[in-house]
Amino acid sequence: MKKSTSQALLKKLGGLALCLSLASAAQAQELLTLEQSLEIARQHNVALRQARYNSTKATVNLRRNKFSYLPSVTAYNDLNRVNGLTFDNVQGQVKRGNTTTSNPYLVGELVLFDGFAKFFEMKRARQQANASKYIESQAEITMEATVTGKFMQAILDRENIRIARERITLLEQQTKRMEILERAGTHTESDVYQLKSQVATEKLNLITHENNYRRAMLELAQEMNAGPNLNYELQTPTTPLAITDALPPLDSVMARALAYSPQLKASKETVAATKSGVSIARSNLSPTLSLNGIVGSNFSTNIMQQNPETQQMEQIPYFDQLDQNQQKIVQLSLSIPVFRGLSNHFQSQEARIDLRNAELDYVATENTLRQTVQQAYQDVLAAQEKYNTVMANLEYTDKAYETAKRRYESGVTDFFSYLESLNNKNKAEAELIQSKCEFYFKQRILALYQG
Image (tube, rainbow, N blue to C red; front, side):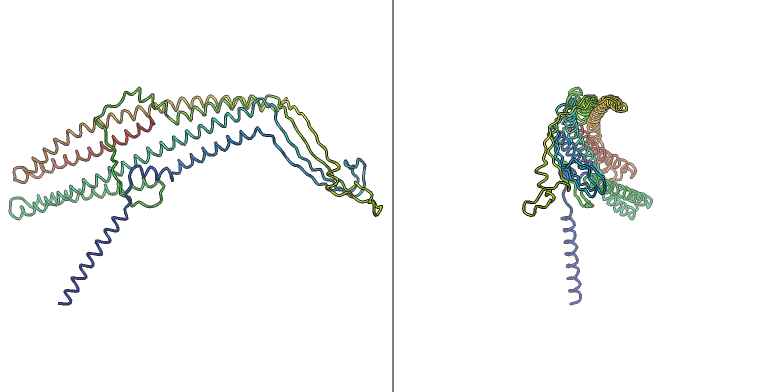
């Protein structure tokens, strides 16, 4: 008696442990919405982070060009020791022996005119910074489109799993019923084996759907770059699907896309920056006028003075000499480029070629954008038409299935007719889910291009 009681207690404890483990496993799954997956990708996506760093780098380059208008100040110093015959510039005499000299000085330079090279360089840096910001925005659009596509594909694969499981459950129920009828003699053993074969086929299809779902979840996690955690429970987007709403005209959609497109704006800023590059190349042919200021001094071990106490000649200390020998120079310098191996000429030619390529890139970007928007617009229309067709088909297949089910259960029709109606029903359900996912994805892509 005690033994049976202890066994029952162990069974209850085992069942409780199993329930707790299942509950903890269910709690371990993190609910993930589409917006949450996009937010995670914004923080961790590699391509988007690189675009942000490039934008920051371009902003730093712009600041560097702004500060280039300030004067440049450079400090110099040298220390020379000569053993032998030398001319001491500090003393102004030829000396023999050991001579140590030092010439510290400070040079400040302010460019008064350089053919507006600095102006065009700062203008180009500003245009490149704007282009980098637009490229960052385009990278975010690309990331959002990719993550949305992976998310909706995972949702579709999960729904296919649900349909397959429901189909297997239904077929297993029919198999049990068929076994009872076979034992009663109303059906043959062949009918039972056919149902079991169909169940095995559906289980194989379920494995395929589960593999597709795992692959979709892996690709989604890779796009988010959020680590190896794949234990997410995806939440179907709750945004109402305006499938039956009419789309605005293509011309208005195209106009908004062309006005908003960050990629097109980045290409336009690149063309402007390349034009500034042509102006910079031309500025290199201009003379440069600079204002220089020099404050310096010098020191030599040959500079001596008499010590009033000892009446001996002693070397003047280093800093005393620097104070005594201090000099200040202001100079105006003009640099005229005469011949540099035609490097400025070739640089100007390369800049003009770069400008032509940038203009062609802009045209290509605009053409690609037009084609993409047109394709996305047609995809949304196709998804609407497919949804309407599938909805009508699903209504008919549901009625046909219910009729075939009643006729099959009453023995009026055969199993194959019933199975065909079931296949048509499941196919229509899968197509409905697919059409919804396609519409949501295509509509979101079209909205992204319009801002």
